Image 1 (cartoon, rainbow, N blue to C red):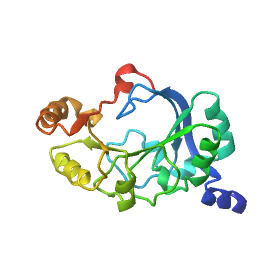
Image 2 (cartoon, rainbow, N blue to C red; image 1 turned 180 degrees about the vertical axis):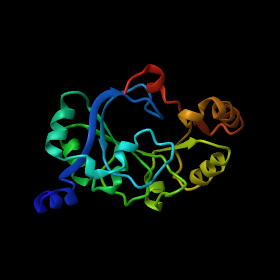
Image 3 (tube, rainbow, N blue to C red; image 1 turned 45 degrees about the horizontal axis):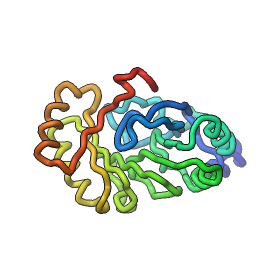
Length: 209
């Protein structure tokens, strides 16, 4: 990577793009809505059950100019979901301002473990135990989505819920490989604690990206 490219990446004018695609949002509050997904490479949160581990090494994903990414998005949708990897490892200021200037709504899914950047119409915080969110992530979260892998994740979910703002939408989502075991536990928990909602990875049932 040249020094010039390094500087552009540092400013968020170029980003390590893993993939981009138009699909249906499969999880959380906006389930069922069409959106253009932008997956940014780079993540050190290290979830052992991550289903996109190929996103972890940013060096595997070529720095791509934000202008090109936005031009691609404009062809498909008025809503973009930026995900990863961990997108907040990079400055999101330039890409979100460019998207918004083109009339595109900006959504993010993040662990919240890195400093807040960007302008967001929807901020989905999906916290992880091994690298917990910064306070600013809790303060900005519109949606809290906790992945349930075992019983202790209910405790973690309540801990995280106590830190978000009033009105933040609360979701519990079964980890896919453990869904047969944990889904009944989630159903029972939500019925006893109705402030929570259930999120399912419907895109996997529908066999879409």
